[in-house]
Amino acid sequence: MVKSNRHILVVDDSKAILIVMHAILNELEVPHITTCLSAEEALEKIKKAPRFFDAIFTDLNMPDMDGMELIRHLGAMKYQGAIAIISEMDPKVIDLAADLARKHNAHLIGNVTKPVQLNQVYLLLQKLEHFAIHVERTKTPISESLLLHAISHNEIIPFYQPKINRHDNRVESIEVLARINTSQADEIILPERFICIAEDLDLINLITFQLFEKATNDFAEIKEQFDPNLKLAFNLSPSQLEDLSCPDKLALILHLNNLTPSEVILEITEQYALRSTAQLETLNRLRMRGFGISLDDFGTGFTNVQQLKTLPFTEIKIDRTLISNIETDQFSQVIVSSLVNIAIQEDLAIVAEGIERVEELEYLDRYKEFILMQGFLLCRPKAKEDFLNWSLSWRQMVKTAAGHRR
Image (cartoon, rainbow, N blue to C red):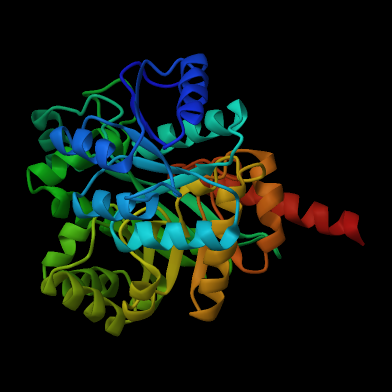
């Protein structure tokens, strides 16, 4: 169910709730469970070892220090684990708690209603595993020598995954995802094994521009099979926004491939806060150049609603922790509904990423006039030739489905 080293802290002023939560977590094979009867006690434990707890389940309504204040303190401490609230399902309270968490850089992944049920906790533990992908290395990173070999031998390659408008089944944009294909390894190497080390070694720009050149070179051929307004979505690390020359470098590569910035969406991960003057200047200059700017992994990270209104984003991508099991997860339903409303009000495109199950897609279809869909269920990331073959199959399927509706 969960990784063998997970540590979970439960905070509630009711001994009965603590006993029930401990029993449920034990039933679900969580190996390390700590309980506290007050937020103050919990905060003292967390201060002693900020990285010890992978997740904190906290009641909101407690005497002295309540759950909202605890969340604020966790944000101030830069707590990197997941937070779940134990409360009644009042949409206004959930919305308030979620926005408070974002404002204070805390990572709220869901809630458990009282009386606590095993299936609710089970779903939250699943979301914890999804969330953990963003804060830990899930596989052993490759060696520095292998990474340098891949870069020097031009072995960083683009894979492609579509963002689909389910209202008319058009592919509106395709995301470029980095892979390493080298004779030095037995399989395609995924980015979670090399992006972190590339950033640590200050090699991320070499990878980015190598990948960007290949993808923009591929784009003309890919675009022939899709709508002429198709856009190319490309990931940038927040650290790369520190480079004030970044907009000029990207624009030059586009010019050499007869493309314009208006054909490209730059996805900025929400894993790190955008704070420095250089980052904000670069972000604005990219937008002034005509690039679309997407906030990736939105919903559990650092950007709050007010920043969406002041920073030059044109798109938000809902974090997959909010998409997983959304058909039964009332917390995620409330947050996603709120995000759709915000996107409409602010004239932002919105993407639901990480769709892996039919039930998730069917639930999200209620928003298909507003949300683009992306995930393994629709199309796994593919190398160019495989992606072009998929596009032919997709168009034929759409054409056949349209014929049946007549």
